[in-house]
Length: 308
Image (tube, rainbow, N blue to C red):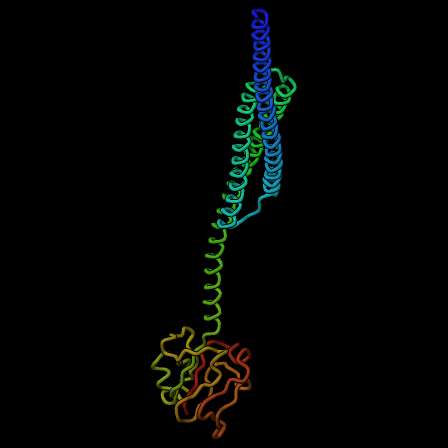
Protein backbone atom coordinates (compact mmCIF):
# COMPACT_ATOMS: atom_id res chain seq x y z
CA UNK A 1 0.00 0.00 0.00
CA UNK A 2 2.82 2.31 0.95
CA UNK A 3 4.62 1.49 -2.31
CA UNK A 4 1.50 2.24 -4.27
CA UNK A 5 1.17 5.57 -2.50
CA UNK A 6 4.79 6.45 -3.19
CA UNK A 7 4.37 5.45 -6.84
CA UNK A 8 1.30 7.59 -7.16
CA UNK A 9 3.11 10.53 -5.57
CA UNK A 10 6.07 10.03 -7.90
CA UNK A 11 3.78 9.88 -10.91
CA UNK A 12 1.97 13.00 -9.77
CA UNK A 13 5.32 14.77 -9.29
CA UNK A 14 6.47 13.80 -12.79
CA UNK A 15 3.23 15.01 -14.31
CA UNK A 16 3.48 18.26 -12.35
CA UNK A 17 7.12 18.78 -13.42
CA UNK A 18 6.29 18.02 -17.04
CA UNK A 19 3.38 20.51 -16.99
CA UNK A 20 5.58 23.19 -15.41
CA UNK A 21 8.32 22.58 -17.98
CA UNK A 22 5.79 22.82 -20.78
CA UNK A 23 4.47 26.11 -19.35
CA UNK A 24 8.04 27.50 -19.07
CA UNK A 25 8.83 26.37 -22.61
CA UNK A 26 5.62 27.94 -23.89
CA UNK A 27 6.51 31.16 -22.05
CA UNK A 28 9.99 31.17 -23.56
CA UNK A 29 8.56 30.50 -27.01
CA UNK A 30 6.11 33.36 -26.55
CA UNK A 31 8.87 35.71 -25.36
CA UNK A 32 11.07 34.65 -28.27
CA UNK A 33 8.19 35.25 -30.67
CA UNK A 34 7.64 38.71 -29.20
CA UNK A 35 11.37 39.43 -29.48
CA UNK A 36 11.40 38.33 -33.13
CA UNK A 37 8.34 40.48 -33.85
CA UNK A 38 9.99 43.45 -32.13
CA UNK A 39 13.22 42.90 -34.06
CA UNK A 40 11.24 42.68 -37.30
CA UNK A 41 9.49 45.96 -36.45
CA UNK A 42 12.87 47.56 -35.70
CA UNK A 43 14.25 46.33 -39.03
CA UNK A 44 11.22 47.75 -40.84
CA UNK A 45 11.66 51.10 -39.09
CA UNK A 46 15.35 51.03 -39.96
CA UNK A 47 14.59 50.33 -43.62
CA UNK A 48 11.99 53.13 -43.76
CA UNK A 49 14.42 55.57 -42.13
CA UNK A 50 17.13 54.64 -44.62
CA UNK A 51 14.74 55.18 -47.53
CA UNK A 52 13.74 58.55 -46.11
CA UNK A 53 17.40 59.47 -45.56
CA UNK A 54 18.26 58.54 -49.13
CA UNK A 55 15.37 60.68 -50.40
CA UNK A 56 16.53 63.60 -48.23
CA UNK A 57 20.05 63.32 -49.64
CA UNK A 58 18.67 63.25 -53.20
CA UNK A 59 16.54 66.31 -52.43
CA UNK A 60 19.57 68.09 -50.94
CA UNK A 61 21.63 67.31 -54.04
CA UNK A 62 18.81 68.59 -56.27
CA UNK A 63 18.53 71.84 -54.29
CA UNK A 64 22.31 72.32 -54.31
CA UNK A 65 22.35 71.75 -58.09
CA UNK A 66 19.65 74.40 -58.39
CA UNK A 67 21.66 76.79 -56.20
CA UNK A 68 24.81 76.10 -58.25
CA UNK A 69 22.87 76.91 -61.41
CA UNK A 70 21.77 80.21 -59.89
CA UNK A 71 25.28 81.01 -58.69
CA UNK A 72 27.04 80.02 -61.95
CA UNK A 73 25.05 82.51 -64.02
CA UNK A 74 27.05 85.73 -64.40
CA UNK A 75 25.28 88.70 -62.83
CA UNK A 76 24.15 91.35 -65.24
CA UNK A 77 23.29 94.97 -64.68
CA UNK A 78 19.82 94.81 -63.25
CA UNK A 79 17.19 96.99 -61.82
CA UNK A 80 16.66 96.95 -58.05
CA UNK A 81 13.51 94.83 -58.40
CA UNK A 82 15.35 92.15 -60.48
CA UNK A 83 18.23 92.01 -57.92
CA UNK A 84 15.66 91.51 -55.12
CA UNK A 85 14.01 88.63 -57.05
CA UNK A 86 17.38 86.89 -57.54
CA UNK A 87 18.20 87.25 -53.84
CA UNK A 88 14.77 85.91 -52.84
CA UNK A 89 15.22 82.84 -55.06
CA UNK A 90 18.68 82.15 -53.60
CA UNK A 91 17.31 82.57 -50.06
CA UNK A 92 14.51 80.11 -50.89
CA UNK A 93 17.01 77.49 -52.10
CA UNK A 94 19.21 77.94 -49.01
CA UNK A 95 16.12 77.68 -46.76
CA UNK A 96 15.14 74.43 -48.50
CA UNK A 97 18.67 73.03 -47.96
CA UNK A 98 18.56 74.00 -44.27
CA UNK A 99 15.17 72.29 -43.90
CA UNK A 100 16.38 69.07 -45.56
CA UNK A 101 19.54 68.98 -43.41
CA UNK A 102 17.38 69.46 -40.29
CA UNK A 103 15.19 66.53 -41.34
CA UNK A 104 18.33 64.50 -41.98
CA UNK A 105 19.44 65.34 -38.42
CA UNK A 106 16.03 64.13 -37.17
CA UNK A 107 16.46 60.85 -39.06
CA UNK A 108 19.94 60.46 -37.57
CA UNK A 109 18.46 60.90 -34.10
CA UNK A 110 15.77 58.32 -34.83
CA UNK A 111 18.43 55.89 -35.99
CA UNK A 112 20.23 56.32 -32.68
CA UNK A 113 16.97 55.54 -30.85
CA UNK A 114 16.38 52.53 -33.07
CA UNK A 115 19.89 51.31 -32.36
CA UNK A 116 19.25 51.53 -28.63
CA UNK A 117 16.00 49.59 -28.97
CA UNK A 118 17.65 46.97 -31.12
CA UNK A 119 20.46 46.60 -28.61
CA UNK A 120 17.97 46.03 -25.80
CA UNK A 121 15.86 43.59 -27.82
CA UNK A 122 18.67 41.65 -29.50
CA UNK A 123 21.93 41.98 -27.60
CA UNK A 124 23.21 38.89 -29.34
CA UNK A 125 22.12 40.00 -32.82
CA UNK A 126 25.54 41.32 -33.86
CA UNK A 127 24.63 41.40 -37.55
CA UNK A 128 21.73 43.79 -36.88
CA UNK A 129 23.91 45.98 -34.64
CA UNK A 130 26.64 46.03 -37.30
CA UNK A 131 24.07 46.97 -39.96
CA UNK A 132 22.73 49.78 -37.79
CA UNK A 133 26.29 50.98 -37.16
CA UNK A 134 26.98 50.96 -40.92
CA UNK A 135 23.77 52.88 -41.56
CA UNK A 136 24.67 55.44 -38.90
CA UNK A 137 28.10 55.89 -40.52
CA UNK A 138 26.47 56.33 -43.93
CA UNK A 139 24.04 58.90 -42.54
CA UNK A 140 26.96 60.70 -40.87
CA UNK A 141 28.83 60.80 -44.16
CA UNK A 142 25.72 62.08 -45.93
CA UNK A 143 25.32 64.77 -43.30
CA UNK A 144 28.99 65.78 -43.51
CA UNK A 145 28.76 65.98 -47.31
CA UNK A 146 25.59 68.08 -47.10
CA UNK A 147 27.18 70.41 -44.55
CA UNK A 148 30.31 70.78 -46.71
CA UNK A 149 28.28 71.49 -49.85
CA UNK A 150 26.05 73.89 -47.96
CA UNK A 151 29.15 75.78 -46.70
CA UNK A 152 30.58 75.79 -50.24
CA UNK A 153 27.27 77.05 -51.61
CA UNK A 154 27.11 79.77 -48.95
CA UNK A 155 30.62 80.87 -49.93
CA UNK A 156 29.63 81.08 -53.58
CA UNK A 157 26.50 83.05 -52.71
CA UNK A 158 28.51 85.40 -50.47
CA UNK A 159 31.02 85.96 -53.29
CA UNK A 160 28.18 86.58 -55.71
CA UNK A 161 26.68 89.03 -53.21
CA UNK A 162 29.97 90.97 -53.28
CA UNK A 163 29.91 90.93 -57.08
CA UNK A 164 26.30 92.13 -57.14
CA UNK A 165 27.19 94.90 -54.68
CA UNK A 166 30.03 95.94 -56.99
CA UNK A 167 27.71 95.87 -59.99
CA UNK A 168 25.16 97.92 -58.06
CA UNK A 169 27.87 100.50 -57.44
CA UNK A 170 28.63 100.55 -61.17
CA UNK A 171 24.91 100.87 -61.94
CA UNK A 172 24.70 103.81 -59.52
CA UNK A 173 27.71 105.40 -61.22
CA UNK A 174 26.20 104.86 -64.67
CA UNK A 175 22.87 106.22 -63.42
CA UNK A 176 24.56 109.37 -62.12
CA UNK A 177 26.44 109.69 -65.41
CA UNK A 178 23.16 109.32 -67.31
CA UNK A 179 21.57 112.02 -65.15
CA UNK A 180 24.54 114.30 -65.86
CA UNK A 181 24.37 113.53 -69.59
CA UNK A 182 20.61 114.11 -69.57
CA UNK A 183 21.19 117.51 -67.97
CA UNK A 184 23.90 118.34 -70.49
CA UNK A 185 21.70 117.16 -73.34
CA UNK A 186 18.81 119.28 -72.07
CA UNK A 187 21.14 122.28 -71.78
CA UNK A 188 22.46 121.61 -75.30
CA UNK A 189 18.92 121.27 -76.60
CA UNK A 190 17.99 124.58 -75.00
CA UNK A 191 21.12 126.17 -76.49
CA UNK A 192 20.30 124.81 -79.95
CA UNK A 193 16.71 125.99 -79.57
CA UNK A 194 17.90 129.45 -78.56
CA UNK A 195 20.34 129.61 -81.47
CA UNK A 196 17.66 128.40 -83.88
CA UNK A 197 15.23 130.97 -82.52
CA UNK A 198 17.84 133.71 -82.80
CA UNK A 199 18.74 132.64 -86.33
CA UNK A 200 15.10 132.63 -87.44
CA UNK A 201 14.17 135.91 -85.71
CA UNK A 202 13.95 138.82 -88.17
CA UNK A 203 12.45 142.33 -88.01
CA UNK A 204 10.57 144.72 -90.23
CA UNK A 205 9.27 148.26 -90.00
CA UNK A 206 7.63 150.87 -92.24
CA UNK A 207 7.18 154.62 -92.30
CA UNK A 208 7.90 157.86 -94.08
CA UNK A 209 11.44 159.14 -94.51
CA UNK A 210 11.10 161.59 -91.62
CA UNK A 211 9.53 158.94 -89.33
CA UNK A 212 12.28 156.44 -90.02
CA UNK A 213 15.04 159.04 -89.55
CA UNK A 214 13.44 160.21 -86.32
CA UNK A 215 13.33 156.60 -85.01
CA UNK A 216 16.98 156.11 -85.97
CA UNK A 217 16.20 153.43 -88.52
CA UNK A 218 17.50 155.58 -91.40
CA UNK A 219 20.38 158.06 -91.17
CA UNK A 220 21.15 160.97 -93.44
CA UNK A 221 24.50 160.96 -95.23
CA UNK A 222 26.41 163.36 -97.46
CA UNK A 223 25.53 166.89 -98.51
CA UNK A 224 22.27 168.34 -99.65
CA UNK A 225 21.92 168.26 -103.43
CA UNK A 226 21.36 172.00 -103.73
CA UNK A 227 23.57 173.36 -100.94
CA UNK A 228 20.90 174.51 -98.50
CA UNK A 229 17.78 172.99 -100.01
CA UNK A 230 16.66 169.40 -100.68
CA UNK A 231 17.04 166.23 -98.63
CA UNK A 232 20.28 164.47 -98.05
CA UNK A 233 20.70 160.85 -99.02
CA UNK A 234 19.53 158.32 -96.43
CA UNK A 235 20.80 154.81 -95.62
CA UNK A 236 19.95 152.13 -93.02
CA UNK A 237 21.58 152.77 -89.67
CA UNK A 238 24.64 150.66 -88.87
CA UNK A 239 23.29 149.81 -85.39
CA UNK A 240 19.62 148.85 -85.25
CA UNK A 241 17.38 148.93 -82.18
CA UNK A 242 15.07 145.85 -82.31
CA UNK A 243 12.48 147.68 -80.21
CA UNK A 244 11.85 149.99 -83.20
CA UNK A 245 10.81 147.00 -85.34
CA UNK A 246 8.16 144.28 -85.45
CA UNK A 247 9.64 140.85 -84.69
CA UNK A 248 8.70 137.84 -86.87
CA UNK A 249 9.95 134.32 -87.58
CA UNK A 250 11.44 134.16 -91.05
CA UNK A 251 10.34 130.54 -91.67
CA UNK A 252 6.92 130.67 -90.03
CA UNK A 253 5.81 134.23 -90.84
CA UNK A 254 5.78 134.35 -94.64
CA UNK A 255 3.11 137.10 -94.86
CA UNK A 256 3.89 140.72 -93.90
CA UNK A 257 0.88 143.04 -93.90
CA UNK A 258 1.85 146.73 -94.13
CA UNK A 259 -0.21 149.86 -93.44
CA UNK A 260 -2.08 151.63 -96.24
CA UNK A 261 0.13 153.43 -98.71
CA UNK A 262 2.76 152.87 -101.35
CA UNK A 263 6.16 151.51 -100.28
CA UNK A 264 9.59 150.67 -101.57
CA UNK A 265 12.22 148.46 -99.92
CA UNK A 266 14.82 150.80 -98.36
CA UNK A 267 17.03 148.02 -96.97
CA UNK A 268 19.24 145.67 -99.01
CA UNK A 269 16.63 142.90 -99.32
CA UNK A 270 16.00 141.60 -102.85
CA UNK A 271 12.36 141.94 -103.83
CA UNK A 272 12.79 139.20 -106.43
CA UNK A 273 12.35 136.62 -103.66
CA UNK A 274 9.01 138.10 -102.52
CA UNK A 275 5.64 138.90 -104.09
CA UNK A 276 3.72 142.14 -103.25
CA UNK A 277 0.04 141.89 -102.38
CA UNK A 278 -0.45 144.65 -104.91
CA UNK A 279 1.51 147.32 -106.84
CA UNK A 280 0.92 150.88 -107.91
CA UNK A 281 3.35 152.75 -110.12
CA UNK A 282 5.98 150.16 -109.28
CA UNK A 283 5.43 150.53 -105.53
CA UNK A 284 4.31 147.86 -103.04
CA UNK A 285 0.80 148.04 -101.62
CA UNK A 286 -1.00 145.95 -99.02
CA UNK A 287 1.93 143.78 -97.97
CA UNK A 288 4.55 141.19 -98.97
CA UNK A 289 4.51 137.44 -99.31
CA UNK A 290 8.01 136.03 -98.78
CA UNK A 291 8.38 133.25 -101.37
CA UNK A 292 11.97 132.23 -100.63
CA UNK A 293 12.78 133.20 -97.02
CA UNK A 294 16.36 131.88 -97.01
CA UNK A 295 17.36 134.03 -99.99
CA UNK A 296 15.22 137.03 -99.06
CA UNK A 297 16.54 137.38 -95.48
CA UNK A 298 20.14 136.57 -96.46
CA UNK A 299 20.75 140.31 -96.95
CA UNK A 300 20.01 141.16 -93.31
CA UNK A 301 17.65 140.74 -90.36
CA UNK A 302 16.09 144.21 -90.58
CA UNK A 303 13.61 144.92 -93.38
CA UNK A 304 12.82 148.63 -93.94
CA UNK A 305 9.80 149.67 -96.02
CA UNK A 306 9.85 153.36 -97.01
CA UNK A 307 6.48 155.01 -97.56
CA UNK A 308 6.19 157.30 -100.57
